[in-house]
Amino acid sequence: MKRINHFQNAASKSVLLLTLGFLCLLSSPTNAAEKSFPLTLRSRYESQAGSRKFHIVYKKEHWNAKQTAVIVCDMWDLHHCLNASRRVGELAPRINQFLKLARQQGATIIHSPSSCMKFYENHPARKNAQNIPKAANMPAKIGSWCHIIPAEEKGVYPIDQSDGGLDDDLKEFESWQKVLKSIGRNPGAPWKRENELLEIKDADFISDIGQEVWSILEHRGIKNVLLVGVHTNMCVLGRPFGLRQMVKNGKNVALVRDLTDTMYNPKMKPFVSHFTGTDLIVEHIEKWICPTVTSNQFLGGVPFRFRNDRRKRLVIISAEREYKTERSLPKFALKNLGDDFRVDILYADENDRYSIPGIEILNKADVLLLSVRRRVLPKDQMKIIHRFVESGKPVVGIRTTCHAFSLRGRRPPKGYIAWEKFDAEIIGGHYTDHHGNGPEVTVRAAADGRQHPILSEIDPKKLHGHGSLYRVSPLAKSAIPLLIGKREGKPEEPIAWVNLTRYGGRVFYTSLGHIDDFKQPAFNRLLKNALLWSVHRLEKKSATVDTSTAATQKTGGTP
Image (cartoon, rainbow, N blue to C red):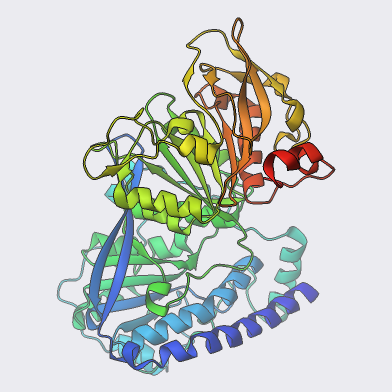
């Protein structure tokens, strides 16, 4: 009960802080006079049919405010899942500010708390919905739940929600059920009204009936629909007023992706954090259903984020044809990174090998994982890479990344930029060639790197390189080797090291990364450790070489 009361107190404070934070913005004369919504719509398209490589694409549009409706889906006052109730309480103040601004600019607001119409039977907003003339073009089955639309059949649903998505601690859940009973609510379906933190104005509409909602849209000339509320993988998608029905029946639809939440239990496949589960559903929506936007496009600042979502943002770029990392890296990320990172994966354009669609997302990233081979980029795209590195953010590279942006000194096509010194300046290596295909590369720990946290719980003897051994010696003075590779009859070479760039950014690189390397648990652990270390979430537990005199002399500090 103490934890439940703590949640209620925290929610009250959240309301106050968010209200104060947005007050000046909402009273701005410029915003009050705005009659259209300038939006950046995000969607994903498959590079080639069946490739399963999806590019992120952004499209700027202006939506006429009076032709736009915001539908608030199932933001109930209480939920049988305590964690769901907590997240709704945290989300509600931000949604309320979003509704205020949309309403001020002339948008139609439709509140749709399903199964709660009895509570609002005398409310003017409920009467408004009931009094709307029935639309002449009523779609078939608009009053029914929609489980799938044809486009979705091309994809694979990303999470297992067959358990109902309950993610409560069992003891807390049992206590919460007792609380619900004590206040006279049905523990299985305790909702009676919309969350009280959401204001319903007399000029708004209240309806959970598909025919009524459709009639409101048609009567008011609504072409554009924004969906906010919960839960994305269930109600937001499937309700008669949800995304699928709106898309299927011809409305211009977008999900406000930071003003939603899922019912997903991390103990179910794919065994990722609750928030990663939400991201996977958002990606599914962007691929197969409709684009998404964020609330800060209306309110300014940054997108809303739940306080318990502490994941770092990782961008993976796969742009090589030798080692099939377009297959291995997505599998690796889903299996190993879903608790610690928010992951976006970018691929080279199928029609232009020297372009990375969606690379703008790197501007918001905390860490970059590269698997790139001999690509130059358009000037604006290479500028994004430079800006990221020069901001001191970390880079993790595998296999061909040591020659990621090099054309061996050849002049790039007009309008494209190379970075021939990326290996020397950032990676800290000296790639000249490789020893060719042959026996597996055996691995041992480097003397200077034995105690480095990246090697924690890794037995180098269980690592083998399935690709050719790269010739990378000598390393930069700022680099510390962690692993040494050996192929029979050839000199040893560093195959994994850390570096500190002159911009202060941490770097990890390994010449491992052949598709068969990912079959080794030790390699997957190595790469995960490197990513955690790069964002300071895997630090030394005891004295290591990083703080030794020798390491300090080599690097000027701990990389």
